[in-house]
Length: 173
Image (cartoon, rainbow, N blue to C red; front, top):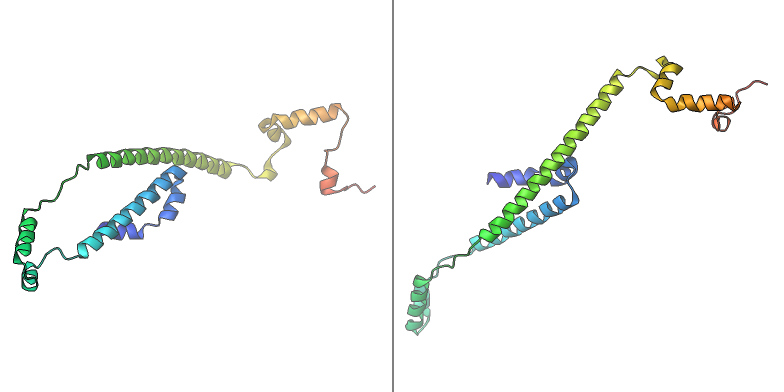
C-alpha cells in the first residue's frame, strides 16, 4: 500500500525531464507503467468477484441432482495450472539491468555537466570586471585579436569594418 502512495506522489513528467533520460528509456518506463496499471486494474476486478460457489442453491433449484454432484466433484478435484514465469522474470531482469545502465550513464553525464557548470560559475565569480581589463590582457587571452589588429595596421586600415554602420560616425568634423 505504501508503494501506491509513493507512486501516486511521483511527478513522472518532471522526473523524465530533470534526469535528462533518453527517448528509449522514457518510452520503456511509460510502457512499463501502463502495463503495471493495467495489471493492477485487472487484479482489482478479479479480486472483487466472489470466489465461492453455492452448490446448495443449485441443488434446490435444479431437478437433476447428479449434475450438481458432478460439478461439486469437478470443483473439489480442480487444481490450478502453474505457469513457468522464469522467462518473464528474465525479461524483467534484463529490462532492469538496461534501465540501471542507462540511469548510471545519465548520472555520469549529469555529473560531468555539473562539474563543467561549477567550473564556469567559479570562473565567472573570479573574473575581473570588464572595465578593469587592459588591451594587453585581452590580447593575451585571444591572440587572434592581436593578429587581426596588426594586419589592419599593416594594410593601413584604421577603422573597424562595420563599426560606423552599427554605432554611427562620432567624429565632429
